[in-house]
Length: 152
Image 1: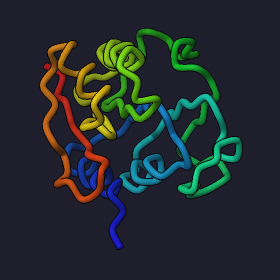
Image 2 (image 1 turned 180 degrees about the horizontal axis):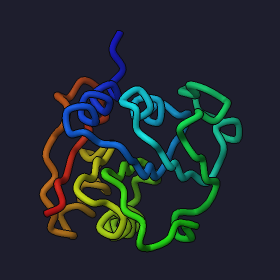
Image 3 (image 1 turned 120 degrees about the vertical axis):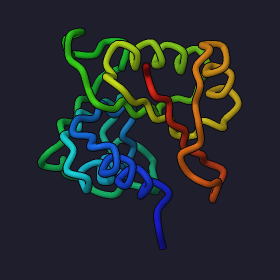
């Protein structure tokens, strides 16, 4: 069975993505998909996978080409001058937090931003209020839709 995050691997390969800032790692499901595309990943989450009550923990150990940072994304220990080919957003899905993360993405993404669950009401509202154009990246197969925004 194909996992809905497999589209992330395909996207990264097709667009020659080499570096990813992942906001919200959960159980490393998305992290694994970026690694399969040979991306260097900096993954930021407020809890380790073992601290979460997640049924989607893919691995307990930190992947080799990923740096896991346990921190609130409001206090990122990443220099403001650092750029990533892609920023992946999959955190609280709350409107104000998503708006904050859109601003982070503008700062850190050189070209691409991908939203998980971009069809969720609060996420979609934040996207609309920020006036950005997000397109579907995957045909809806579950309640979770993935959307992509190209920064120009």
